[in-house]
Image (tube, rainbow over all chains, first blue to last red; front, top):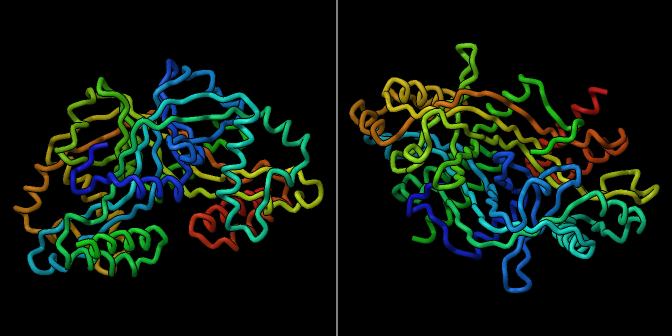
Length: 212
Length: 212
């Protein structure tokens, strides 16, 4: 991903926050069978000091047979995105010099992939994912709610993925290259649009107004 | 992408509809400098009978120098996605045999990439993108609203991308493998969640209830 310097995000806390808020990643692998993309939710574990992503695929997915052990992989975590109309820029009314663009947040993670077959890893990974995603449920479901034999059978149907992160980069394209008056125009324009992504991008543009 | 047969989408109209509704794609290229992902909005042109994607990158983005002419590329168009709690399934209350999953829509496009430097292609492509994305504006902006010299200068700062599509596949993972009572439970559960993606996935699950 080409990132203009004004859009580059290097803050580890913000990068990790996007991975947690938008955990459904595109896992991109390269093997003799070509480039493959699988869409998988990942749990970011940094409890040991090292940043590790945990996930799983169905055993029926040939990915675990196609990639070599410790293969280099690329993951994309997709934040919000939306179209930015030149109509949002007050300066357009003055001189007309404005073109459309697209605002978005994307986090690219590089790492080495380990395929994990052991039940302990699989159980820990499933527990981590479950706790993360059930936290908003009125009565959070837990793996222990299911019959033990059923879970044992389910464990044999999946293969664990453990990705040791070697680099994280982020593209925060949220109108930083616009004058203040246009940033405010983008916030106003997107707030009227009222789609979920537009409102999220508006909030991110606002953060960059406040920073200055 | 591994797709279980029950989740495979082969309907060209629905696949193209996702490309139009979620035009902000991940363009995945492979060259001597490795695998690269760029996030770019594309216009789907099938006015000539052939399916072609049109987009552009900044000239400062080295992608156009790195990829060979007519390189094979992969694009991912990302529909909505959301977590599915076992709590949504009424059958869970009966026998407990339920695990979480993730519902989502993804469209994978393969094609050959042509790098286009000619102004006529660039202008047509920008017009197509503009008309598509300005249609919801009260007063749609048009390229002609900007000073001619300014647009001429902007054209020199971008490189056109033209992708001739060779295959389109879709993953529609929207609870088709669940009994009817659980599909209704997912619709009810997601409707309460009230996030934009949850509501979109609920509508898609509903379509698959109606189909049966």
